[in-house]
Image 1 (tube, rainbow, N blue to C red):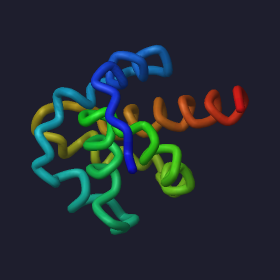
Image 2: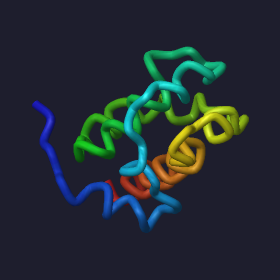
Image 3: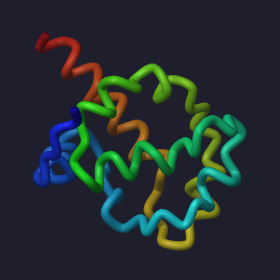
Length: 100
């Protein structure tokens, strides 16, 4: 069972730019992503929005598939900068691994 943490979006800010709350999940980033893997990065951004940090840690290996090509950031209509959000999540995961 996934625990929801409403403060998670604020917690993730210390790991870099967090614009996940600006995203309205239109799917543009997932449509342009060369990974074409289960709605990445849209899925990870949604996990931040709902505070499902357990899900992020469970699916952490997906974060390292990101090529940081910038296509998601260039096409985001809300300028939510999905690529930087993913980079911040990588930092969060590494920090979590270090603490455990």
